[in-house]
Image (cartoon, rainbow, N blue to C red):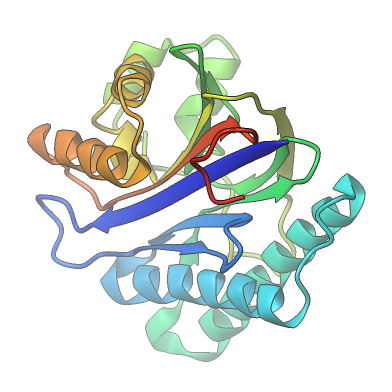
Length: 254
C-alpha cells in the first residue's frame, strides 16, 4: 500500500484583479478538486465556488467507498452533476450570474493504489513518474480538439487566439458529459492537478522537471506558482500536488 502527502496553493496571478479559481482537499486527503471559473469576475468566482461547495457537501454527507472503483466513479459523476445543476440553476435565475461556468477536475484516491480522475473543461491532471509526465486529462477546448485532429501543433495551440475557448464546462447546460481516467500509482510518483493558469506559462516538460527535483508537497506547490508568476502569470493559477511513497516508509499520512 502507498502513503501520500498533499498540498495546494492558489494565486491571483500578475494580471487579474480577482481570483476565480477554487480548490478542495477532503479531510481524509482522498478527494482532490480544482475548479476554474469563467463568465466575468463575478460569475467566474461564483461558479467555481459553487462547484467546490457542492462536492464538499457531497463528501460530508456521503463520502465514497474507496475500495470499489465503480462506486467511486458514480460518486464523482454524482458530485459533478450536482455541481453542474446548481451552477446552471443560479445562472438561469440570477441575471448577474448569467452565462457563468467553471471547469473541474476531481481526483479520488482508491485503496488499490490507484486514482480515478473525472474532469470537465481545460483544467488538467498530470502523473509525474520517473521524471516523465503523462497528461491524464484531455482539454475540452477548441484548440486542443484541433490538435487531436492534427490541424494544429502543440506549439501553434499555445499562441492561438482561441486557446481559452472551451467546448465543455459546468453550468451551461442542465446535463454535462464527464470524462474519466484511472491511473495506477507507484512509490515516488506525483500527481499534479491544476488550472490552466499554470499550463499557460509552464510547458509540460518544465512542470515535470520542477516536480522531479522536489520531495516536499508544500514547497513544490509554492515553487510551481512562483515559476508561473515569474513567467508573467496572465491568469489565476491553482495547483494541488500529491506525493506518493512506499507504505512501509515513515513519511506519508496514509
